[in-house]
Amino acid sequence: MNTTELKGNWNETKGVLKQKYATLTDDDLLLEEGKQDELVGRLQVKLGKTKEEIHKIITVL
Image (tube, rainbow, N blue to C red; front, side, top):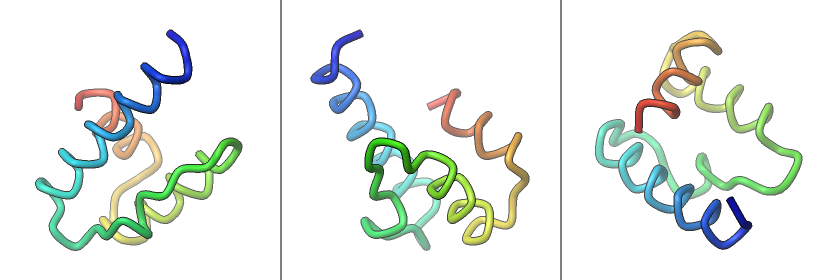
């Protein structure tokens, strides 16, 4: 998978997450290279879910 495909997939995933969890904002879902752990932590706090649950949510989307 190249970076263009990855960005496209992430943009789709962000849209689905925002639809499913209305409390999430664009700022919550900003993903910069090397910031995945920070994003997962932010989602954990915002959604009240474990790290494993967050990974499962993102993977299923």
